[in-house]
Image (cartoon, protein in one colour):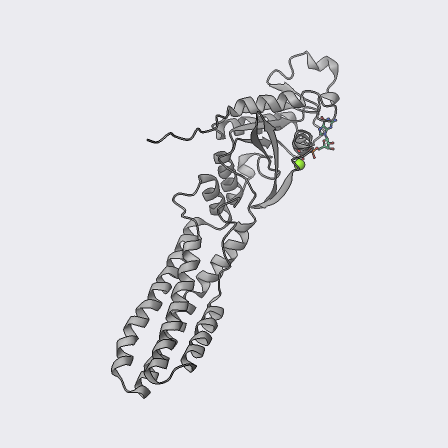
Length: 330
Ligand SMILES: Nc1nc2c(ncn2[C@@H]2O[C@H](COP(=O)(O)OP(=O)(O)OP(=O)(O)O)[C@@H](O)[C@H]2O)c(=O)[nH]1
Ligand SMILES: [Mg+2]
């Protein structure tokens, strides 16, 4: 499994679950007669409802132990507090179904068959009410599942390089250039945008390169709440950040604004942030030496292939990844 929400099973809707429970109950009832029939109908309906609702809840990962990358991301997309509330309501309904069984079983046993049948019908009406009461929760969980299932295959524990910078500075060109060949870049929906994930291998270690257009491409104050939360998720995944700048301004954004984005990112992330000035091929030779780009860690041209590998190697070095060795127990 690639991420904690990928294997979530489908969520039954309230009506579906009620239909399923009652039609199975009717089938088991038909095979018997008298009190036996009423009793096995009650047993079948309550256990189908109770088990199905419990399975909905237990399929979800525990948010307390979830990697902060995924917890933040889930929070950005669906809201973890709301999700917890939905899950606890559904768990309540699961328990309630079992309670109803224990409440009606003895009553039915002690009654005449006609009264027992009435009790059983009353129990079914209450079961239907209980399931309907969590209908909204089930629906919310179904939507949450749909949104979270398609999360990017990002492994927050693997060494990760985030690629940031204003639109059109060459982020995708860079990621494509270094991840060409076997490791095709893949795109996934990511909150309000698309995230591109590429991989490179270095000394047998796989590095993830994450290109996040629409997130780390403008000042923090222009991000809405969801985008800011997605950025916090990235903070938990990234081990180094490459900020690409386009000193030619051809990207449409003045270099000052790009520098200030870089400074914001440096402040936000606790990991090394490298300033890479791209489109070196478009910079006039004279200005290369006049100190205009003193704050550049690297001058690069993706289109000419200048310093592309150097930048990648520097990023890998910045990640400074040490694979965790298994702890020798005993
Ligand atoms: N001259 C020159 N052009 C470049 C270089 N790198 C990228 N470009 C061009 O810049 C344009 C934007 O490149 P992209 O890689 O799409 O930029 P991006 O940062 O991914 O843009 P968004 O996805 O919109 O955020 C494209 O036309 C590239 O061909 C470079 O080193 N030199
Ligand atoms: Mg791009």
